[in-house]
Image (tube, rainbow, N blue to C red; front, side):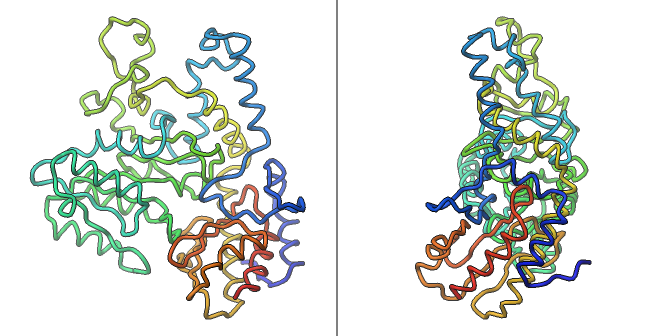
Length: 419
């Protein structure tokens, strides 16, 4: 274990020893009005733009200009199969088999599509478990699904308290025991957006399946951040966005995982569209629908090629860097940030993210005691881009692809000015 030191020279030494440090040069780093690079710790909200993204999009623009509709078959990467060019690299990032992965739609749309298939409530078995303080969009989606199926929202949602609880998984099992056979679905954020806690997905899945419930994960804050092993975890489904840690651009497409055991089950209820129809039948307009095998069978609409080109640019960077190496650096970055924050010895701040590096990704959430209303604005004015969540939490995400140990040191120095 490295002995950490609170000094700029030590931070620079860590950067010199960092095998991933050159990846920072592959990204556009936002600058202030004086052309000085900002400290950008907001990859948990919107990842930075790879410098290669423009060329990937420009190539498809060029093929569109030169080929028109023939681009579907004659582009350098024919558009008809473009979604499949993302599959292997995305599967590596989330720990899945290629047949379990598809890129389509956006995050909450995919969540609804997954619940169409995997939330099949009955009169007695209709309840859904969410972690307390789940991301609001998940809550809204669950509420609307309950209402759609004619169930009372207050009766249908069970919140699993997780914050600062060592016995949280025992509590989760107690929820199943107390509700007997009434839990239809467990839907948990793989990494909680607020605290940054990375849950034990395998344990959650095993509990859900033990009590005959479907299990799904919203991995929006986990994909590209922590080492996911979705196939091994065994969940029925997972969804994630690509614009946070996966750096594909604002509002870009979402990823879907559907476990291999569902790959050939055409009896699963799902909404259909022509892109989920097997390719050999897709253009035979009068042939019966034949569902594609695997996660691709959940596609509905024609893919958006320009958006996927941006995803492809980022995935190639991830493929070169490797998730194992990124997670190792992330653990050291957050450990250094945690060390420096504790070294401030300030009663005005506390860390609400788990101390165990295996129970978090690159986000450290800092609770500020009685902050001035301009606290976060003042931090921004000092050249730091973080995310503020009411009432008093700063979410900081030193991201291993483009953040440095010097960034971490300078952030704490600037935070010190405001405490």
